[in-house]
Each structure stands twice: as C-alpha cells, then as structure tokens.
Length: 526
Ligand code: B12
Ligand code: SF4
Image (cartoon, rainbow, N blue to C red):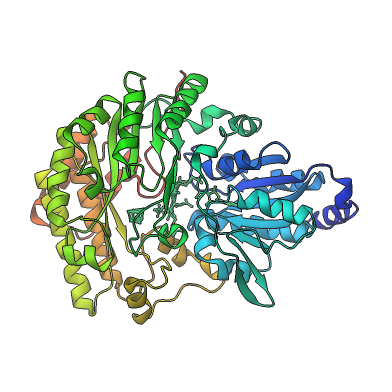
C-alpha cells in the first residue's frame, strides 16, 4: 500500500462542496481476454446522463486497473466508485480493487451492482469495503441513489437498494423494471476517450467486427437453477424492434460492425418483436446470434424462421439443460420443453440454416450418489443421440452450480443435501469457489470428483469428435484430423483420460465458448 497515505490525506483536504458535479467512476473488472463493449457500465453511464462526470475503467483493457483508478481518485474529482460484478474471475479483480479504493480513499462511496451482489448481498455487505448494493436494473435507482446522497438525505427510498444497518441487511423493495425504450443511446464516445473501439469489436465466427448488444431485461420464466430469477422474478421488458434495429444500424455505420451478439437472457420471447426486427435487418449485411428457449421458438412459424435466416440469424443459444423430462420438471424449466422436443427442434432449426447451440447442465442433486451417477450417464447418452440425429447442433456442457432461488424446491433440496454458500468475500475468492462460479467443478456435496472428471473427459472427447464451428481458427485439415483422432474413443464410449486429445487441442489453442464466449481475434480493418 505504498503511497496510499498521502492520497487519503489529499482527498480529505477537499470538502464535498468544493467539488463541482459529482464524479463517478464506473469499473468493469476483468472478465475476459476477448473484450466486448462493457454494456453493464455503459448502460449505467447512459442513464446517469450529462450532469455527472463519468469515467469508465475497463479491467478487460488494462494490464492493471489500479494505477488508473488510483490516479483518477487522487484527482479529487470523484466521490463515487461503482463496480459491476459477476461471479468467477470478475469477482477476483473486483474485491482487491474495491479494498484498495476503501483503504486509500476512505471518503469515496462504494456501490456494487450486477448479478453477484444482487444474489449474494450478505457476503458483500458484511465485508468492510462496499457501502451499497443496487439489486437488479439500476437505470432509475442509481441516479436516485446519487441524488439522495448528494442532497444529504437517507437513501431509504431508493428502489432495490440493499444496505447494512445495525448489523442487519435492509432491502428497499425493487421498483418496476425500467422501460428499455427510455434508455438513451449508449455513450460509446465516453468509453472511446480511454479505449479505442476496435479493441471491443473482435473478429468472431459471426463476422469481422462483432458487437455485443443487450435489448431486454429479465425473463418471463422462473427456472429454479437460474441466477436471473431471484432478481427479475419472471418479469421481462424489451426495447422495441424499431429501436433495436436503429441501434444496430448506428454501430454498423459508425464502426463498420457486421455481426451482433445479443446478450439478452431471452431475446426471442416475442415472435412479433423478432419478426419486426428481422424485417428491418434484411439486406443490411448483419449476421447475428442470440439466446432463446426451445419451446418458445418451436412455436414460431416456418415463415418466421426462414425470415430470421434471411435477416442474418445464424446461431441461437438454448438452455436445453437435460433430455430427461423428470429433470426438466425438477428444475422448473417451465413452459413446454421436453426431451422429444429438444431432439425434434434441433433438426427443425438446422433445416433453416440456423445452428442450434444447446447447453446442458449435468449433476443435479438426487437422493443417492448412485442416482446422480446414473443421471449423468443418461444425460451423456441423450447428447450422443442428439448428435446422431442433428449433428450440426453445438453442445455446451455445464455442471450444476446452485444459485440462491429462495422458496424453490430445488433450493430446498440443495440445502437439505448440505450445501451452503460462502459467508464472506474472502471465502468466495478461493480457487475452489471460482471453479464453482465457472460451472466447472462445483463444491456440491452430491457430486464426487470421479463424476466431475467423467463429465470433463466426455466433454473433451465430444469436442474433438465434433469440433465447434465457433472456433474459426481451426483450419480445414485440423477440423478433419481432430474427429479422426477422437473417433475410436467416441465410438466405444472410452472417455477416460483423453490426454492425447487434450494435448492436440492445446496445441491448436482450440477455444470453447463455455467461459469467455466465442473465439475472438483482433478486429480486422473495415
Ligand atoms: C456479457 C456476459 C459475460 C461476458 C463478460 C462481459 C464483461 N463484463 O466484460 C463473458 C462472456 C466474459 C462472461 C463470462 C462469464 N459469465 Co457472464 N454474462 C454476460 C451476460 C450475457 C450479459 C451481461 C451484460 O452485459 N448485461 C447488460 C447489462 C445492461 O445488464 P446488467 O449487467 O444486468 O446491468 C444492469 C443491472 O444488473 C445493474 N448493474 C450492473 N452492474 C452494476 C454496477 C453498479 C455500480 C450498479 C449501481 C448497478 C449495476 O444495472 C445495469 C443497468 O440496469 C450475462 C447475462 C445477461 N443477460 O445479463 C451473463 C451472466 C452475468 N454471466 C454469468 C456467469 C455465471 C458467467 C461466468 C462466471 C460463467 C459462465 N460460464 O458463463 C463467466 C466467467 C466470467 C469471468 N471471466 O469473470 C451469469 C451470472 C450468474 C450468477 N450466478 O450470478 C449470467 C447472469 C449468465 C447466466 N444467466 O447465468 N459473461
Ligand atoms: S428461460 Fe433461461 S433465462 Fe429464463 S429463467 Fe429459464 S434459464 Fe433463466
């Protein structure tokens, strides 16, 4: 902490009144070596508007964000430090940086938002570094909090605010979901002051310059394993198709973007919105990807699916979760999804030239170890059958990591099985809990290490037998060689210790989308 003391001293010399407009630093901690525009903080910046001095610091674009943040705070122009935090590696950078802010600049008010603090407020606020959390979308709540604090009022009326008072967690009830149509254009120019835009528009399998865009809040479903549910509780609101199309064409014209990843939890809730958007996108030279539900899009007409393809939709991510109807019921998948439909729909969608990208979650709790193990084998069998019937389907595998969906049956089952979340931020930072967040090796009492290893071994063999299309750097020769190397193992179901495949994949720097999204390379010139 060399140099911290003088900075504290310098800041204390300033009175709040001597600062003109309240300056706010918005921090996006490191999450990926392949950055996309940090929509969470851009969104906040848009909603805060012009009367605050805003500086965005993106951990994805800094070798070490601390010197940048330290120098900004030392200028005395900022009173607030806001960090967006999701679990996993992002938390690993958020915690030490926040701690340094608190220790070096104790007068700065620190606010966290995003999925991690919204779902784990206890561990966050019981650390001495974070003053407030805003639970869920903060479009109205964040400016309201700053206004209340600037006016010297208590923040007790700020919707969705969570704070600690006399050792107890106080939650102000959430407000309505903000109207996405009211979100002003995102202030990319503020971001560009520090980070050239090309660094946010990588080449992916979708196109030469790929932009991430978010067009709706929440999701109308309430799957009991999903981190979206405790925050949005079945609520969903979207930006209108015309405005989304306008946003897309604006970044296309300003930054030569030719591909969009829609990062909405559920982009395809409304067929009407999708049709209107797709009509506007025809002939505009944009290729796009988004996330949806099988049972929702299976209700779309053939005309809509054909239109989507003409409009540039090339792949859709779906939470298939499991081919077993009893598991789909156990996790409250809701809607009408079934194993039979998962298989049939993959063939249907692929027929329209749109690749189904199915994610499966293995390792849900069962009453006995033998049943957990049998279920994993059944799920693997189902995935093999799916690849047989619809080989174009991309498969993403996760291991079940609980989220605190209070009141759900699944939550009751995991607590009964002896599972508990860490009580402090320090504990969350241990490597074991990081793996938990990444859905790679969760510390759940019903999974043995042999089961986890079996899932990972199967995954390696499957990913070699069927190389993902999303890693566009795997050349034609290796795309043929890798499946040949894996054919025997896959054919005989011998997945154990596939070291030769792992070595080959490492050599190719073969990239899977589970953790950091699609393979991304530096943007190519327009
Ligand atoms: C883009 C993205 C990523 C990017 C990272 C982008 C970045 N930040 O640089 C990548 C692909 C790298 C990624 C990785 C992971 N992600 Co991610 N990611 C997302 C995604 C799809 C979109 C986030 C986004 O941009 N939203 C747009 C903005 C506008 O919405 P928002 O973030 O909710 O922000 C609003 C509010 O939350 C709030 N808010 C947010 N931040 C702040 C900060 C302050 C100060 C305040 C006041 C308010 C506030 O106000 C905002 C405006 O209203 C979300 C799902 C989703 N649809 O939101 C998952 C999601 C956040 N990711 C998730 C996970 C689990 C991960 C991983 C940990 C694991 C994995 N296998 O996916 C990895 C590892 C991350 C890492 N390396 O640390 C989960 C979190 C679940 C949980 N248990 O909390 C989500 C919800 C996906 C899901 N449904 O499971 N992710
Ligand atoms: S449909 Fe997807 S985003 Fe919606 S609640 Fe279920 S898992 Fe979560």
